[in-house]
Length: 360
Image (cartoon, rainbow, N blue to C red; front, side, top):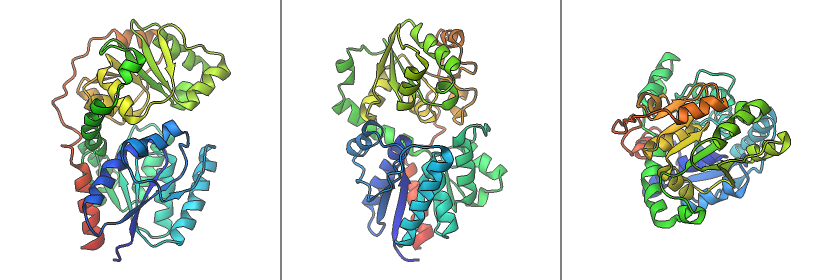
């Protein structure tokens, strides 16, 4: 097979974090050129550009500038532009990462154009089809050629769906990144000083899932729970959250300090030093585990069940004000010595397989 460029399809904050160690590994090896296409799914500077700058990711070679929209509208627009891009270039494989709409679009375009597709972070299942991310990851797994699973449970899920022959246990690229990122954050971030925070004297919170932030009653309950915590709560406000707080007339008061989204280095420093993290994000749950900070997850389920099994993550299924306060007061005894996400060499394993499959 010719040594055309690999194409990374990215579009959202989690994608940018996860490609950083892969790009670094590819750059070490000769004969493995790659290109990056940014779909524009996340287009705010604090949700996009800052990650390329901080993590030393090469600037995208192509910009699709899709922007926001409904799932069908956004995914369809991505597919049309990605198809045009692929038809005009000789890509040897497409690499998609995670479970966002950009991942779905890249996997489908590759499959239809008969370009091999690698899905990094394959095999995750929340078993909640009401989540668009669950639909995206299931479809991406079933149309991809190489499935890189971050955990043994993910490997088990793939086997249950008849995909074992395409599956490889790689470990988690986010763990690769956190090992390097924490070192950089300690060197470069002074976010605690800027926000006048003391270690273990604040909570760090994020909210973005539609069933939490698009329902006025649910959002009011969650904000009430955060506001009632005994320590300050740094709430890094996703644009969707800020918009809905304004539209619903909900005030983030009490102990809540509403902020803009943070860059990667500042955010992991805040995660590392928080007394607990409160989130509905899959990636943030996992980062908290890597950084040995207990986590409260405002969801009825999680695809990262290893964090729950290790006692490091509590699911707050009802997301009422009282349920959040009760969970925050619950004693936790995390076991961080377990390594369900590999040993920090996932990027090397993934590139080894792609190199072997394409060029051997």
